[in-house]
Image (cartoon, rainbow, N blue to C red):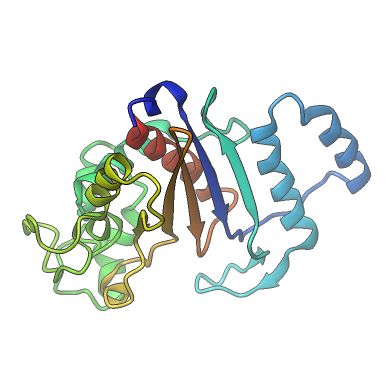
Length: 253
């Protein structure tokens, strides 16, 4: 696996999309514009194409927020990380937050105050006293999100107590196992990183949206395929693309 750093890596990102808005560009003019721009930035263009597809063919659905969505199922995007990094520019992406949140996941933390202290407030809405009380978590301190991503990555199956507890070697350290397997048995087909733990879902302030990733090694290159059960195309997806691309690069190196 020593050539992983030299050869780079490839991420294959699979997402289910939701959320849309009105588009003022007609189909015919959009097609002409798309054809002229696809060669300039294919990574960005596939995202824009998918947004257009959702706006054109998406089905109206109700959701828990009451806002409603336009939704399609099983859409895919692929990003080649060998020579570039998929940080989209059509929408401003908070890069520092991408990095800090990923490191927060990797650390196993579930305390939103860790991010708040770094002036990153992307989890504030799900960590407020009002929100936690409304979800039935009145016994938790403000900021305690429950056994979300980081806890599942590093302590899957452990009994969650609070965000301040130390869990040591409790549960399964999925991330550590994946890295070890990549180096010792790279053809293994069980390199799965799962945030979806049905037992813990009721304890989470927000169930995981990007819930499963599979890693794959071929020709000394690392690929990652991500599945999202739910994805906000305008807000969350550009962030998630960058986050899992970064995770793939970090593991490969």
